[in-house]
Length: 225
Image 1 (cartoon, rainbow, N blue to C red):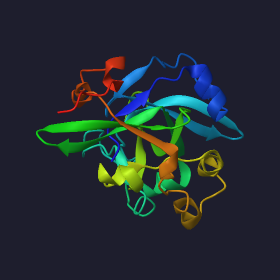
Image 2: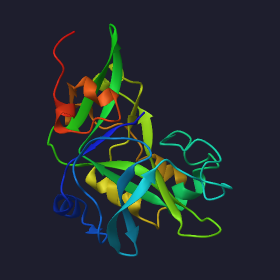
Image 3: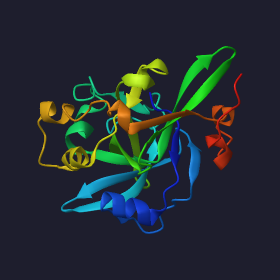
Image 4: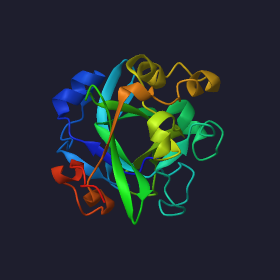
């Protein structure tokens, strides 16, 4: 799964990396332990333009009677996202990229739950495959929410967790955002594990285990148990 995120790249870096225009007033201060229920930065396509904005992490289907009707999904499985009722319309029409600089996965090691930080070896921002949705209340502004799509983990990461977020390379990211592509098979073909050799996987601090901690120290490896 993907339940914690690192996002430290400034707006100008993300705008250049994803060829996207930041929304006015977007908050992109560094986050070292971003949690569900907080704002994800996303890239969406509007016509020929890409835009950088935010959605709340925790997907609320458009048909929900209320935002708290059911648990908000933070992830959707690549194997079923195209057909599951909460996600299938967004899969066709509201795909997005979730720019991050890394994510955490956990493994039980002795008596402690050890987080691992996963980044690209290149240290460039990642484009995670995501979906976004708009839920409209009877009064007031719409609620924009989103999630990250996961696939089976492979390589070294599989020894830590059986799932991982889908990391889209540049060409696949462009196809994922292309509104003219609606064929489920063509889209599902993009939702595959990243090559193991492209990933850097290192132990992170146990500070990550608490959502209250959000500082550069979260990235510092713990000493051996």
